[in-house]
Image (tube, one colour):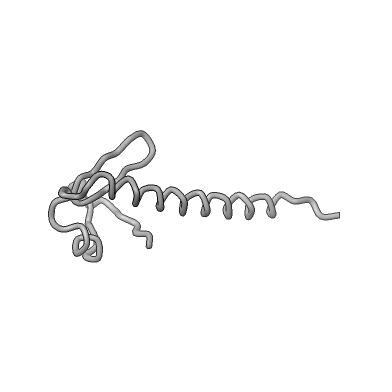
Amino acid sequence: MEFELKTGPQGHIYMPKKIRDVFGDKMRFLPNATAAVIYPANADLKDVIASLSVIISDLKLRAGKKGMQDERKFTVKN
């Protein structure tokens, strides 16, 4: 499941109810230069890492599919 989040005029991000229901009211946000992770404040970090491994696998699959679609666009047909 993927959510698109937007910031409001004051810079606040609306967190969908589905996420709040699972993660609770207190969350941690850990960003780096190109990505971030949000997880429940009381989560076991080993569980967070395991979940991130699943997300990374999904992103690799999506990137591979996108790469295949891009290759099809540029394939020269004789």
